[in-house]
Length: 339
Image (cartoon, rainbow, N blue to C red; front, side):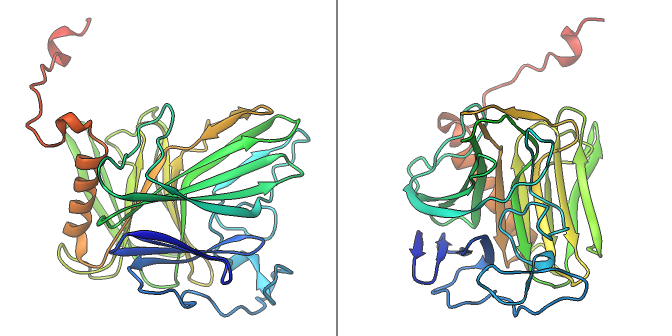
C-alpha cells in the first residue's frame, strides 16, 4: 500500500495493493485510471486527443483538446465541459463560473477525519491520504481534494474541502463528494430501491446515452433509493465481472448519477443533492463534503459486498463493537410514539 508522486511525469498513483488510482496534473487535474493494481504507471488511460466537431479547443499544454470530452477529476461548467459538473459556485456578481486549477499535492500518513460528519478511520491498518490543492485566485476559492487508501482494501475514500480565500461571499450550489471518469465501454447500472419493510431491491439495466440517476430529497437517504450505485461490465455475476461501485457515507439528501456522452465516455458522481442545497461560504469560511467510497473489483458483486462489509465493520463502526456481538436494542418505535 502506497501513494507515489512523480513530479517529472506530473502523476500521482494511489495503490492499495489490489487497486490503483491515477491522477495527472497540468493546469487542470485529470483522471487517468481506476482499476486493478498497476505495478507501474506508464501512460495507460491517456486518450488520443483530436478536435471534435462543433466544440471549442483549449490551450492547456495538450494540442487539440476539447473540454467536452476531457477527463476532469473534479469538473465544473463554463469552459466548454457540458457534462454533469461536480462543483457549482456562485460569486457575488451572480456568475456561476469558477475555474480551479492545480496548485500542488502532498502525501499525508493515515486517514484524516471529517469534522461533524461520519467517516472511515484507519485504526491499526496502514493508510495514506493524497491531498490535492486546486485554486481559483480570482474567485477566492481553494478546493482541496482528499483520496485515502487502506492496505489490502479495494477502495478509495474521497471527500473535498472548500475554503474561501477572498473577500466576497461565495455560494455553493453543488458540491459532489466524488466524480469518476470511465472509458467508453458498455456498462450496466445497478441500484437498490424499495420502501418501508421492502428495502434493497435490485434494479439493473444497460447504461445508455444521457443521464441515469437515483436520488433522495426526503431529508434522509430513505429506503426508496439507497445512496449507492454500481457500474458493471455486462454479464457480471456474484463471482465474476468488473464492478465500479460508489457509496456515500451520509444519511441526508443525496444524488447518485452516471452520464454517457455522445462519444460514449462515462462520468459517474455521488454527493449531496444540489436541489435545495445552498451553502454561504463567507471569507475565511470552509465547507467539507461527506465521504464517498469508491470500490473496484474484477471478481463480481459478492467481492464488492464483502469489501464494503469489511471496510464498515473495521473502519466505520466504533472499534469497541467491531469484533463483538451487537448490544441488544430495545425497539420502542411502536410502543412509545405519541398518538
